Length: 333
Image (cartoon, rainbow, N blue to C red):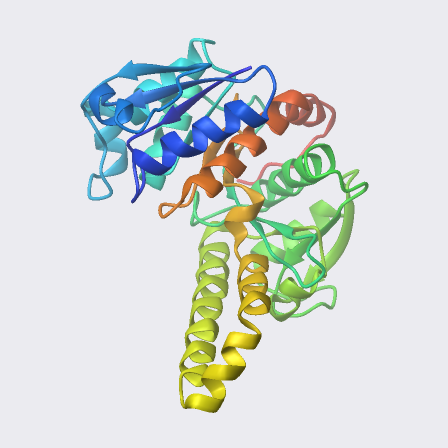
C-alpha cells in the first residue's frame, strides 16, 4: 500500500508529518509513503528513509490562500501534487493537515467524486463517554445541503463506521432540535423521511446535548450546523481544562492535589482528544482523502495514516459506490 502525504501542510510541518510517517512505516506492514514537499526541509527530519520517498516541490498552499484559486494556480504545490499521486494511481490514499478548503477543492477537481455522490462530506470521529466515539458529518465541506445529501452522508457514514471502526449495524442519527418525529426545519423533516427508507440503522432525531453520551455511532447534519457543533465541542473542552488548571493553581493545597491526580487528568484530556481517532475523512471521493487537524503532532499524523490504511484495506470507497448503485435517493428540484 502506498500513501501520499502533504509534508508541508499544517502548523508543525514538515517535522511532525515526517516523524509520524517514520513511525507508521515501522508499525504498519507493507506500507510505503510518499512525502510531498521541500526535499531539503523534509530530509532534515528524516532519520530513516525505509519505505519513504520524497516528491520534491517548493510550492505550498497556505492557510491564507483562497482554496479554489490556489488549487488552480499552484499546480506544483505539495497539496495538489499529493492529490495527483492518488489520481494517477501511484498512491492509494492521501493525507494533509493543510488548508481544508484547498484539500476539498483538490479532492473534487483532482481526485474526483464517487459516482452517485453529489457532495463529499468532511467527517471527523469525536469522543464519547464510553470511549467508542461517533462520526459526525458534515462539518463544513458544504454549508448548504439538500435532503438527499444528508441521506448520502448517512449511508457513507454507516459504511465507514461498520467497515473501518468495526461497529456492527451502526446507529445513525439526524442532528435536530428535538428527538420527536416531525421536529426541525424543512431540510431535516425531508431528510428524516428519506433516511427511514434506506437500509441503514436509522434511529431518528438526536439532540446536540446527547452527542458525547454516545447516543448514536453516526450523526448526520448539514455542514453549517456540523461545523458549529464541532467548534462548540472543541471550545468547551479547551475551556473546561483551562478552568480546571486555573482552579488547581489557586493555592498550595490545590497544587498538591493536582500533583496527585496529574496522570488521571492527562488520561481524561487524551480521551477528549479526537485526533486519537485519526483525521477527518472526506467521504464521497473516488479514493480515501484524510484531513488531519492543522495542529497535528506526530501521533495524530500516525493515527491519520492508520485510518487511511484501514479505509483502503476495507475498500470503503468501493463499498460506498456499490451501495449507492443499489439505492435510489430522491432528488429535489
